Length: 441
Length: 127
Image (cartoon, rainbow over all chains, first blue to last red):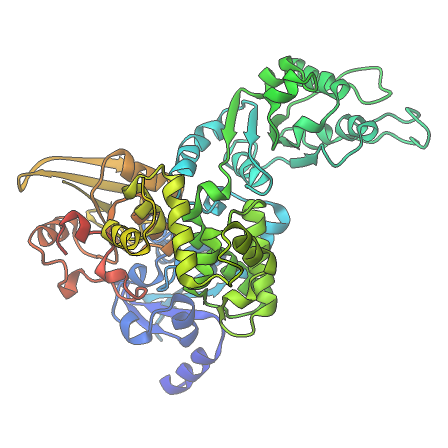
């Protein structure tokens, strides 16, 4: 088959294909490879393949190298690459030897396809989140990330405190997926969603005959999580009677199903979460202090989104990418006015609310750029209420003033920290403070 | 001044997100006074940024980098010079004399503006 015909065929398929010579230099690079990597053919040819593919396996466990060494093809190995746009993608690669007409090895061939959308869906369905999925550049979150691996590797009980929508379950899943229990179940229970009468049987299961309609034994969530992790969300909402039973599980590693006569041993790691102050509940007599000390071996406090606003642009990019894949859209970004509006908003619902806002914008935005008019009216209304300008609609300048004032207050009027958080130069901040006559101390 | 270069087998590592090791070179008065390695194996993105901050790195020279990690590095106050390729010693020498712009140190295919670097001017570093 002529080269021209081969090129036409290779450029018509959706899988990326490239070939290398014995020095690992790229000798061919099809159209799909250009699209997936973002690197044009002219820039790829002649370059070392690892410089173009940029995969996590390139340097220490190159799949093509294994094939060249052993002679065996490898099929559908999942790796991660960074494309030319700085985006991390999951790809499935397959490798084979390239031989000439005499059967001598002259190089290798690698094919790959972008499976990022599938991986994202799988992650959402299976809950296989890791710390890589927690989006943050904030210093407060950095402190949490620093201790997470050690927390995960230990077997200690963890209490995660944070407002609703701050990612408590995401953190719990990340801890589980970084621990030695990662191949065992992760079972989440929203203790606040179940009535007290059901919570005990839901957690510990029941024996047949324990109550009307209990026709057969039913394992509880602790049994389902055996060997793995149980995540008890809204732990502050459980009744005192269930608290006693939970305390026993934590102390003695045993529990009794409802209606059971013998104890069941439990090998489950417990992670709890709350958006309430457990200390206050103890003072009010609604939470046992002995249980509190048992679950509070390691406490992780997640900051609300309004305390880490520098993460908003990163989160917006992440959600745009996520919803582009889900809705098969091509929205590229938001306008600077939208960014300013979001930075000025306090997000009582935290990250979950931001995600909902972006998804709302996806419905209304018909183009490729999200504008202020696509934002929910509640966001713009909240800003108008907070900072009324004699009932006139907020202008960009007014939003800028509001943004700077809020950032100064948050950073206790420290100009360096304020400028850093706003992502502007310190001299720019000084200039705007002077120009807008903003109170700066 | 502390300059960190992500390395693999004596070369600038391909991708900082996956790099196994950082080599740190400390300079004072234009002379190298110390060098040491930081292992990054198995560290996820925020931890990598944490290592840079912990060791007081002024500039990170690396290969390809994801936008997300680049944003985190710059937000932590570290100057970033990405999409660099070549032998570590050659790259370091070129950086110190402001010659890192030469084509042999440039990696193909990067996002707009990445090659110019981030935050390095504030710290008086040279590219």
